[in-house]
Each structure stands twice: as C-alpha cells, then as structure tokens.
Image 1 (cartoon, rainbow, N blue to C red):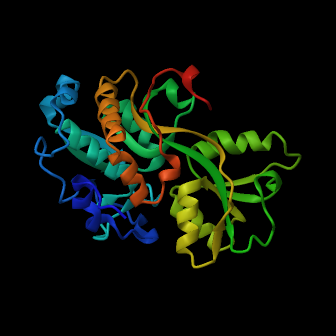
Image 2: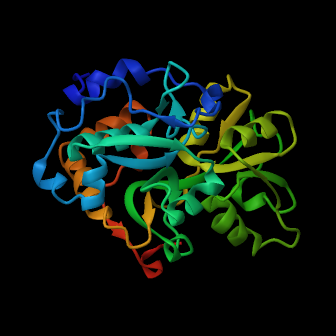
Length: 303
C-alpha cells in the first residue's frame, strides 16, 4: 500500500478511529482539526483559486459550514470524541487548505440546515445532502459524491425484506432526508398498504429504533448502512442493493457567489487524487465523482 499524500497523512492518525456512538452532539462551533495548516500555509494553497472567493468571505477569513456528526463514516467525530470528522468534513477542510481560508463548523441539526442557509447564518452546509429539485428551489449545490439507497435490517434479514416488499412494514428514516422526501413516496406509489414511516432526528436514532425492534428496517444511503452493519457485530446487515445512485453535494444559499471557488478547489483535489484518497480512508470510494459541478436550477436535478 502506497503512503498517503502528505496533506492527508498529517491527519490520518487524528481521524482513523471513528465511533457509532460519536453521534453525541458537538458543543456549538468546532474549530478545524488541530493538525490543519494555518490558512494560506498549506502546500495545497492555490492563489488563483483563492482569488475566486467572494470579497465578504475574503474579509471574514473564514467559511461557516453547517454540519454535524451522526452519519458515519461520512459525518462523525474523531478519536478525541469532540472534533467533527468523517469523509465530508475532512474534504471540506482540504477545500479550505486550497482556498487558504479557515473552515468553521457549526453543529446544526439536519432539519435546520436549510433555514440556516436561507437566513445567512452559515455560508454552506456539508451534510450528505442529495441534490433534489425541491432543494434547488431555495439553495444551490456543488456536487461532491454519488449516493444510492439501501436497507439496514436485523442480522439474517428474518423477514426477508427487500425494496420491493416494504409495503405495510414499519420503516425508519432520517427526518428531512432525500429518502423521506423522495424515495419512500415513490415506493409508496406501488403499495396498496403504504409503508409505515417513522422519522428520526439522527441516523443513530433510526439505528437504535431498529436494534430495539421499534422499526423493521431503516432506509439509508449505502455507505452509512454498510458502516453501521459492520459495527453491529452481526446484529444488523445492509442489503447488497444500491438503489438509483444520484448526485449529492455541498449546499449554499440561493445565488451564492461562493460556489465557483469551492467547485474549483474540489476539482483540484479530484485532479490530484487527494479527494479519492480521502474517500478511500473512510471506505466510501464507491461514491467518488470525476467532476465537481454547480447546480442552481431545479431542472438540473435527477430527483
């Protein structure tokens, strides 16, 4: 196995161990990881890309990012139990290094992300967000992942559940997620007895409901489901299904002038394979993309 590129190797020890119970909330804002270079001092810094930053962001010297743990391995906490980590926060920190700007994470619950963007409380959101037509009515996106859906079920799948047999069953899902807003309603169109949907504030809450028998399965993005199953010591399993992978992205206020700089920084990481190395460290390389694209219009969405 070849060594990690230096910018990634500096962080590997700090985030190598992740925990499902890391869903304990961050206390307010979390500073960037302690081993992240100071703004402008990283070998990744690119002045030509930094020049794309809006003037107000340059003056502030920071990008405020709504995010939070509870969706491992994409959104989690580091070994210290405090620092936000996971594949997407680490990606955002790398973007900050390219731009030479500080990344400040604000722990905001999933269903409050879009109000935070619309009110200007934050500059962007990193929360495993599917790019949907409904969301594009109020926010813009820069794509950073390709995610599909699967089921997390009790070990051995005793009810032999599949995506085609969920009608009439009680299913857990993250409140405000693409699965709740788009995927399950589409499945329900083929049901005589609708799927009984229970929503939860965090993915960890949905998994707890499954382990305690309050729901029969959870509908989840594939990478987190695989991670949760692996951590359960056989108590749960993720079905070998990746239903309709579609773009996910970093979200921004409508008509944000920050998208161009972030897309260019992410594309640099893709071109230099640091983006792919980061996904591989967290075991989610199945969702890698080749191009960071800006989405601003509902007609551009696949959902």
